[in-house]
Length: 151
Image 1 (cartoon, helix red, strand yellow):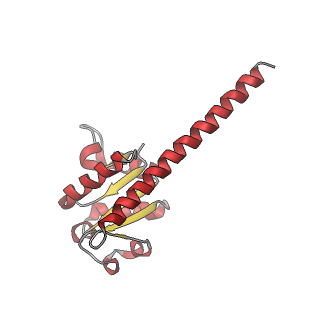
Image 2 (cartoon, one colour):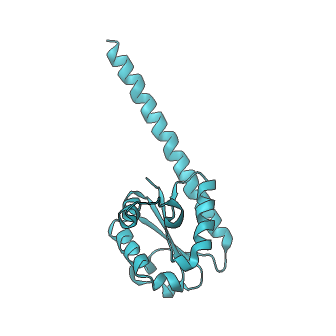
Image 3 (tube, one colour):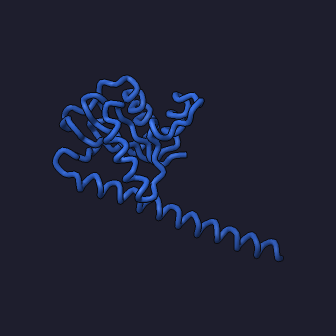
C-alpha cells in the first residue's frame, strides 16, 4: 500500500502530478488517483484503502479542493485516522483552510517552493530509514531463529 496519499481537486491535476513525481524521486510510494487507480477497480474502495494505509497525506490546498466533496471526505478520514496531514497552500492562505485542517502546519508553496521540496526530501529520508531498520530487525530475527534451530 501507499505511504503517501495525495488529496487534490481534479482541477489541480498538474500540481498533484508534480508532487507525485517528486515523491517517487525520493523513494516514496505515493498514491494519486488519476495515476494509481487501475481500470475496473472500485475507485471509492481503492482510494479509502490507500488512505487508510498511508502515513502521510498531502492536501493540495486550493479553492477548488476546499469546495470538493470528495476532498472533504478524504480530509475527514485523514483527521479521523490521525494521519500526518500536510496542507500545501497553492492559492489560499492558512486562514482559508477548512475546519480542523487549519490546525496543521502548512507548506506555503505560494511564497517558498523550497519548503515543499524539503518536506518531500524529509519524507523520503524517513522512508529510507524505516526500510533500513526493518532490514536490521528482520536480519537479527533470522540470525536468532537460525541459532535457535541449531540448538
